[in-house]
Image (cartoon, rainbow, N blue to C red):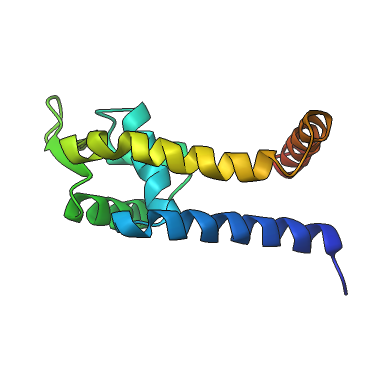
Length: 138
C-alpha cells in the first residue's frame, strides 16, 4: 500500500537530518545532540530532567546525549544548589564560542528550505504543516 504524503514527509525529515549531521560532523555531534545543546543555550541552569521533558526525551536517552556533550566539552553539569541529587546544566565557553557557527549552520539549511518556495508558497507550506501538527497532536 502506498502512502505518498507520509513517505514524502519522512523523506524530507531524513534529508534534513542528514544535511544537519554532515554540517555538524566537524563538531563531533549529530542533530540530536545539537537539539539538546540548543535547549541548554535557551535554558542555562535547567536540570537534565527539565531539559528531557522540554525535548520529550526519556531519561536514558537524555543521559546518553548529555554524556556525549560533556565529553566533547560543550556542556558541564553542576550540582544543584538546592538539591544535590540533581544537576544543573550549563553551556561551556567552547559551546559559546561555537554558537555563532551553529547559528550559521541553521541559517544555511533554512535558506535551502526557504528558497525552494516563493513567499506565498512558503507561508502556505508552513500553514499546512501547522495543520498536520495540530492533527497529530490531538
